[in-house]
Amino acid sequence: MGKKNNKFESRVHISLLLMIFSLLFLNFVSNYTLYRARTATSEETFNHLRTTALRVSRVVQDNFPQPLTAMQIQSLKREFNLSGILQVSSRPADDTPEAKRQWLMTVVSGLPSGQIPEIAEKILSSEFNSMTKGRGSEYFYVYPIPARAGRDLLILSVNQESLAYLEDSTNLILGVVVAALLLVTFLYLLISRTIFSPYRRIAEQAVKAGRPVNRDEDEIDALVADYEKMITELKQSKAELIKLNEVIRNRAESLEQFNQYLLESSNSGIITLDQEGNILSVNSAAANILGIVPADYVARHYSVLFKSERLLNNILAAALGEGIISGYREFNYTTGKNIRRILGMTVSLIKDNRQEQVGVSILLNDLTEINRLREELETKHRLAALGEMAAGLAHQLRNSMGAISGYGQLLKKKIKIEGQLPNSIEALLQETHEAEQMINQFLNFTRPFHYQPAYYNFKELLFDLAASFRIIDNYRDIELSVPNLEDIVIFGDALLIKQALGNILDNACNAYSEHKGKINITVRVEAGKLVVGIEDFGCGIKPENRDKIFTPFYSTRAQGTGLGLPLAGKIIDLHGGRILVDSQPGEGTVFTIYLPLEETSPEAIKATPLA
Image 1: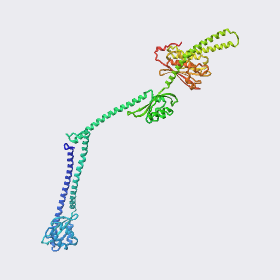
Image 2: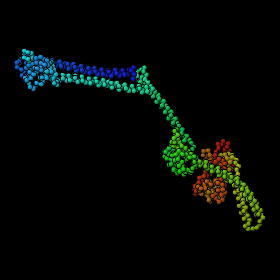
Image 3: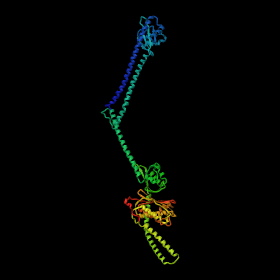
Image 4: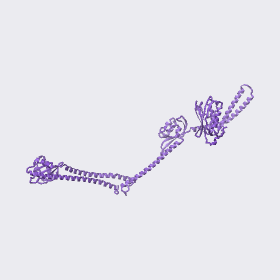
């Protein structure tokens, strides 16, 4: 930090110095208090010893020339609270250290043997008429007795623990103060450096970050202001990031939801796999096509779903392992409900924004109906070509049959011989007649219908058809069940529809070998279509023959022409409808006819009468 505008450092220095001065002041006060207490105690002890020395000296003078007895000494010690009284019969010439040493050398032999070191220490270390500290808490006083009582030396001692404690504490506190001053000085330098170092680093980092401190202000105040500004900016940035994150999250959710809607709305089946081959999603169309429940296969390997499709497994393995995709493929597939379908499949690679493969998508389409229509179209084309060829042949055959019939009639008239010949001619004419009827049916099948559509009441048509079947001799033992309908007005050629339903009904009656059984007719309106069901409980149709019943000239009955059901199918196709067949051998057959319905006005109820 710079040398100017460092008000913060100045404040810190002043604060630390004030703390040091406060400690010094407290130390001074404590030392001064101890000093006053020590001085008062020392003066009190000195006065006591001096007064005691005067009194003891009087006793010594009164006993002169005899020294104090032991009893007197004990009595004086108790009276004046002394720890020791020593009377020496001579004294140094003066108070100088040299005079004391010479005196000690001359009198040492006359001193008490057990007290020589102690007496020598006290004489040498003290001044006369003054108090001196001895060992421990002992204080002594050396008093020269006046000359009129001899030149004796009196040494008094007293045990003063409080004074010794105060003197020792003063010395200890002085040493502690010196050490404390050194420690406080060190701490002052350390703390100031510790306090200022982070701010200096912050200021340096701020300069490196392109946020220099304003030198016109105190640097710490500038740092705080810049920090507050940075916090404000961070809060604003946080708020903006939260808003942006919310926008992104909403967009992601909307996009995810849109993608989900897109997948679910697609008419094509879509299955996605990750790079390990695990199923990520199965849309509703794919579930319907494959006849599965998506939850049973999501997160499982694709081989579990397509376990019986070896070709499909190989294609997916190549796409996931090597990134090789094949073109459009069609294959047969049997659903979980044992329904056989023809599917179209396209496999595509899924790549991320770095063009790295992250999975595979499978596009499925149910081509069963398209394939059926394709086969029907091919059949119709073949039949059209066959019809054109057969029509000419039929005309030639009919002409020939007409000639044969004419010659047979002439021959019948001319021959009058009795016997088998007229009967043979009659049989010949009958066979000729039946062959001509078959040729006429075939010509009716091959030539275009005379289509005359109009509004008509389906209820009347159905009742008329049922009534006409009930009067046929061969079908008298067959119970025909017809629903009680309301008026249903549809648009079409009533005669052709009646012919188509009649052919199907005739096929149902012939399902009973003895022409004895029951047929149920049902009628309902479903999704804008009229649905008519014709159900018998006869012999049924074998699965291998089910796709052949609408082929011309195919019949399982010896007397059948094989044109009834193909003609019915042709009429229903002409009206934009379709026929479905469900049959079980030995249990019966259900023909379901779908005819389109058109919106009609009340006037249309008055439909064209069936004549």
